[in-house]
Length: 148
Image 1 (cartoon, rainbow, N blue to C red):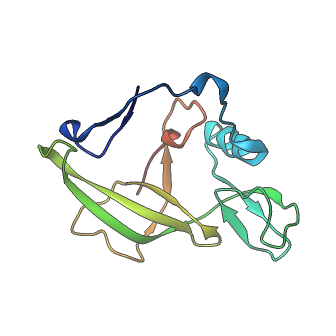
Image 2 (image 1 turned 120 degrees about the vertical axis):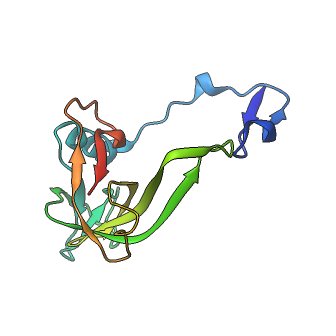
């Protein structure tokens, strides 16, 4: 049996049968592993290609199908778009609203979706932010506490 979550507990759809998840192993690939290692070290890594652009998260291949080099993303990030969440997935009001944004490195391509630690009245498209990492990191995207 498998579950497809639609958003709220009462909206769960049940698909009869078995899913053979034991036969499949997800691997993030070479560059995905480098990205995870970078996060564990408190860095955000991207892929620098021959065209001089740095892509985040790192691509497997550059747009021209060449192999790029892993490069650290340093400097500021820019808020491309954002949303403010006032309720949890069950419709209960949050104690404090959460801001989630799509963030792009100022000197890079692509971007990440993550929490923003910015007062609601100050968040806007074009806002410049920087990542804040947790003290103890394990090598996943949640090692970034938020951007502020």
